[in-house]
Image (cartoon, rainbow, N blue to C red; front, top):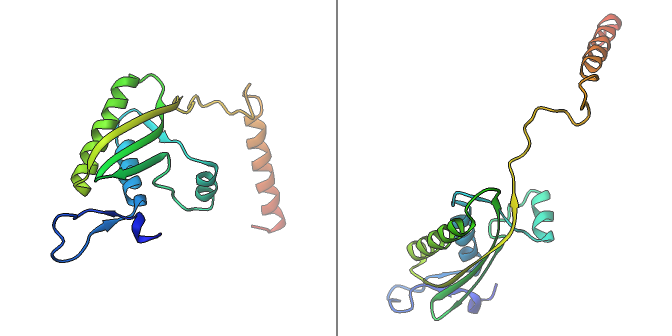
Length: 159
């Protein structure tokens, strides 16, 4: 990444040298501040994020766009919320937490934090119903079949 894209943090006090962060660092701060808020389910990612995560690379800045002008940050955050939460309250909590964390960690000020709710997600269904055995008549057959196979292996001397 070119040095001119970096964000200089110590414009006024550069006696010992410069302090810069990349825009990616700022995106990570905003993303982590967002997911800390109760009611946020996950950040929205792109297809590229999904492919990267599939191959094991954790994308921490996904769902965030940031720009900085005159040491003021504008952030756009794209999130999924938990179903049933008070949307305006969660959005306000996200804005406050981002403002607090960015200021605390970088000394930059926030100009805008725009929250884009892209969806709602409910908790995963933990009903205990096996989708392959909806009526419950296959579970005993699976167990019997498994026990039968183990017994045959032991008779043949295989482990």
